[in-house]
Length: 300
Image 1: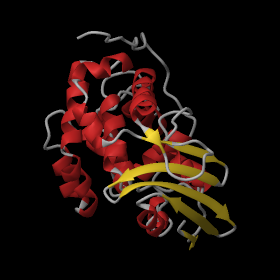
Image 2: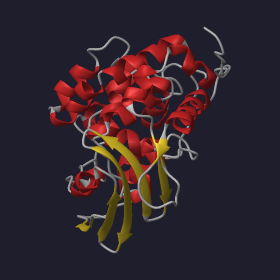
Image 3: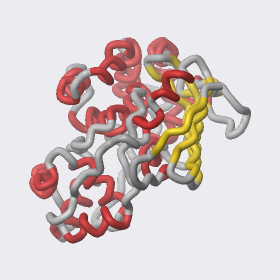
């Protein structure tokens, strides 16, 4: 079992940093408790379970599985322990206050592209409840137990070959219609090509992600901010984000993507950090109109 201690430069809130990786509290690929995190990962190096525990100013890292050595070596990168602290002060009293309230929030960098891409596809144009149902169902049925200790009973996401081989109708019991099912199957069949973006410049990584039909700027940003740690990723096309940004930064209850980008422009290069702080602020724009209704796709 490889293990190492990583010195952390500055404050680190392990749970808030890694929480964007969890697709809801029932996600069996990750377990988060104060100062303690377990992750089941499939990367280009293979599969592994990683345990992180904060001990004073250092991070104790342990790993199991074929990719244990690789994920241990990059554990500090995973939690942004070496990233320079962004300067967000002076442009908004709210953002300045949030940066001071949450000094330990960093951006994760899992290098597990498919582990971020498949859930993002499942989230396209559906409710969060629908997306979580699909992700949890695929993990329960087609995932496998993660290597390492029997507790906390983590599961690895389904293997890429498994997702590619499933017929589209096998996704229906999880509420996934043919369009998203076919897209998951298509990207899974090109997993190696997509996983290789972790070694590309961020701009080239975005270009490769959006080269496949069905993968637009929103999906690319959702992957980039989790798998690549892109500090400037903004999920253009998100149903809620444009309203949150407009409400928090301008007091406007409804926004557009263009207005969101205009308001975030002062933090160019660090917009993902600002978005994360706004998500943690507790601010929510007023609710208007009906909510999206979950659908079922037992046959298509």
